[in-house]
Amino acid sequence: MEGPVLLAADIGNTAITLGAFRGTRLLGQWRLPTQRGRSSESYGKDVLGLLRSEIPRAEVGAFVFGSVVPELDRVFKAMARRRLGVPPVVVTPRSDLGIRLRVRKPSEVGVDRVLNTLAAHRLHGSPAVVLDFGTATTFDCVGEGGDYLGGSILIGPALAARSLAWGTSKLPEVKVRPAGGFIGRDTAECIRVGLFQGYLGMVREVLRGTLKEMPAGRGVRVIVTGGWGGAFAPHLPRNILAPDLTLQGLRLAHGLISH
Image 1 (cartoon, rainbow, N blue to C red):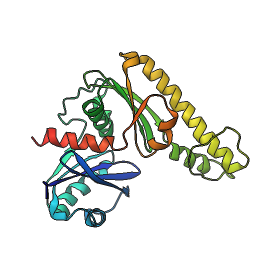
Image 2: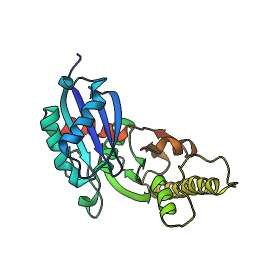
Image 3: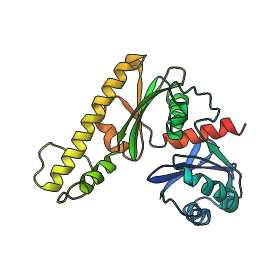
């Protein structure tokens, strides 16, 4: 055994992404659906079940999480103590990570956006714009010194597809996937084209305007992450695809908080 494993949990509105690190190396990652109302015992059973085939429980020496679902904070704190046998490290927007939140209301910034800022600055360099494709798609602007400058929030692609089906009588819910053209030949294909090409156009326009307003102009890195990042990254300019960016932010935050 090379050293204890750090288990990190990014608790989002739709999914909980888990990552296991040994040092700086990501050993594996897993996803669970976010289910409000579940107990720490229930979540603990699932987490240990995911880890069992690759990482013995005895090797887990630390647990860190960040959450945008406040009602699950208590649940995961209890899970860490009872099922993992380690004290939890909780990252919040108020954690001392060396990042200044240069916005009007710092308390309103989601911890996932702070973690993306930290990882982008430390691992990829700044200035940068992080596009995180999740339940919502967020644009996080990182200043040259690593400060969080603000950004924008769009509805996520899957939620857009679901909303279209919910709000109409005859249109089906379709899976979002890349579309090669602009003319659909049946209803489902029409929706798929509209969702992907329309969403891509919206993202490109917001990115264009964001880069124009960034202080450093042309020297800004574009970093793409999140569950839908892989689908959209090939269609966006000069970007770095970093699917584990938020987990890396949790790893870095744990090192800053626990030392």
